Image (cartoon, rainbow, N blue to C red):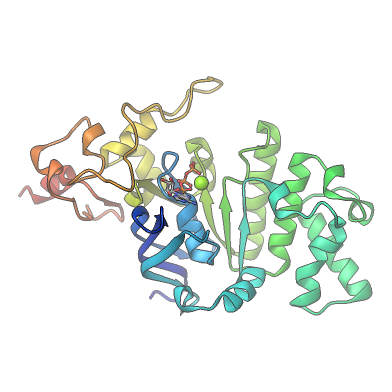
Length: 329
Ligand SMILES: Nc1ncnc2c1ncn2[C@@H]1O[C@H](COP(=O)(O)OP(=O)(O)OP(=O)(O)O)[C@@H](O)[C@H]1O
Ligand SMILES: [Mg+2]
């Protein structure tokens, strides 16, 4: 493992076992990526492609029906898939933070902002009294909450949506994490607030060197926020590349379709209007999972699953088309 790798996910497989285990949904089916200090990885792909399940697998927050059935999640040199729930809880409070789409789901409506932001500093850093108050205020200041000394006495319902999300950000930062996983953190925010929040995350990252996994449906946000992008389709990363590379020279037909479906500025078109339906993860098509929808499908795509091909520019794509190009003399 490279010295500055914060997180290395290797061959991760997470399945849902539903209907008493008779139906197996391969939500995450062999995912590999590495995240370095200060780096942001964007995770994109249609609804149901396994982005959230990948994130929840990393931090051990999977719903009951789901289980990691293969692979490793190596965080700062330790495989998290081998940790107990108790150990994972400690890691989540401190070294890995998770920011979810709905801030209200992460905030307790009955507790003041102070109490919620103070909790990690109280338990993990053992701060009390004035130093605890100062710590909370500085965290709130870091996420641009105005007049934190007053605001911290309020309750979540007294905050705007954007403020709540920033409070969740303050709680996430309280433990001084090395990795932040943000799953569509701005989906419920309006565009201006969203832009402010993204700038804030970038500032925090510059100041702290934290690594970031950023899940989004919005490729514009990816272009702005991310260093690398992983494109998921049916539980697999079908292409992974530096952000410029991915936008300038997408290698997988699915990535090309996603980029082609990017709505024009100001348009109200739905995202990702790619022809056909995503596959049923409990009954995947043979060969390449994307073949029934692929504009460039070849006979072997229908029977043989493509492996990862590396054209040598640091990108990886799972597509026979790329395999053929690379095989040419
Ligand atoms: N509790 C569950 N029980 C059974 N299957 C589930 C459950 N939660 C998710 N899945 C399945 O796992 C697959 C991956 O879901 P996941 O939520 O990871 O997708 P996603 O990429 O985050 O989608 P979205 O963009 O809509 O958030 C989906 O096909 C979904 O149907
Ligand atoms: Mg999701």
